[in-house]
Image (cartoon, one colour):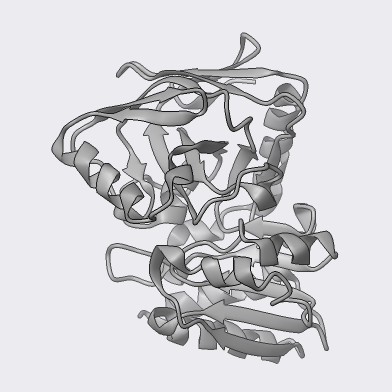
Length: 324
């Protein structure tokens, strides 16, 4: 780990995103693979006068959230929580309860595929004020829309539905985002879970797995994946979903638009991929803390390059460029 760059990232998280003050009670949830990064976050937090603690989870990998579903009051004693494990905790019941009770939660899944700490990545330096204003402009157009239609030149042609669902945004800062946020800079919608239909040609990244080498087709019907192309990359995705051992992981629960101009979708970092300006993503699985109604063993995203995006027929994005 490059200590200088990681310290820069830790200061962004604690000072800019969490805005911790003296005597604030902070819990940093981490795992053995990211203990060094969590210790760095703790050190910076304590320098601000906060009371910081670490919780080292026994479960690693994609099922890390199971414990926090089984223990929904795990965060009850804290004012601020950072989920700094390999995989995201933001969609768990414990996170949902904490947010409902007015606590501040930051999703900081630290998974990378290139051996670097996510805290070292340059995308962490995104201008939060600028991203907030851009997000608010997009949300204004999405607010009353019922149908989101996405196409790409490679053949993506898919429809999402958001009746009575509200578009929101993440920009890192918990105070900007209804008390909880993510390192992923994006607009997101907890879409209706039984409506998504169409074809996605996946050409970006598939969540924690990394970069797609050869684009492949994914068919959705009545909200869930019904077919994944029989190819090397397609079979990698099939195996990854099956490893969750939960049929509900095939359901689309989130639509998102990346807003971070410093991010690149290169498959090196899950959070950077889905944040990249010029991409959209589909979140599979659990969406409870996002405002949806779907429970599952986990959540991860499929990211696609250069979309055209329409809200009730009004064009918001052209070849990945926001044009409103």
